[in-house]
Image (tube, rainbow, N blue to C red; front, side, top):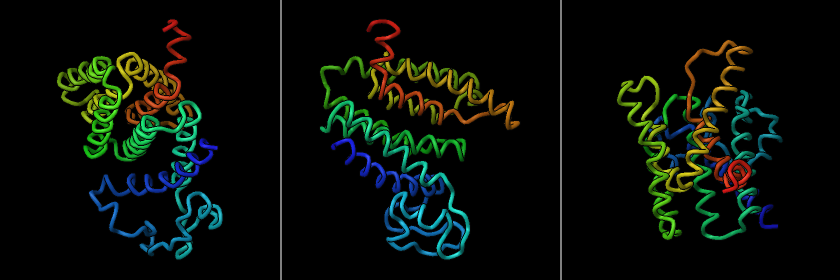
Length: 244
């Protein structure tokens, strides 16, 4: 029951994430400005904003102009809802799981923004860092593990960023790992990086072969995927590999 409620709540937050994904990279307000069609600018009514349901009822088109609504909108809502449900199903509903939900939502936002713009805004990485600090305060006995997690990947990536003058890695990716490491701890952070490298390599090779994608890729979606997997199943993966 709690997981089902978390799923519904995740749909609502996922709808808000779509606003964040569209407006934050443009520096637009995400609170005061009413939701509107990106094509005709028509203000959307409440019945056009019901997560997932409105998209299905409108058959993926704007009520005012008839232009297609990006499938990204229901995809973000469903992804966020599924992650929320998994977190509650695995850990129950408490303050720590709520922190994990916020962290997961920020990673989803970072993933889609980076995929579209090739950059992760400072507002997102700062929020991830603040969530990491909150995580440390809630689990202060694991402070050393968290602090080590904050630098175990981000520090080498920062050196790589300096040496390559940003050609091989973005500074936003480095900043993302600082906050993520505070949440995951050093072992899961290393696991997240390895998973991200594997996912990025395999998926991008397929994209280049099947869809003629260029060699350059946005790392954010793969880093976020690795971090989410480490959050949801890191303990089980590490136990299976090393008996940790």
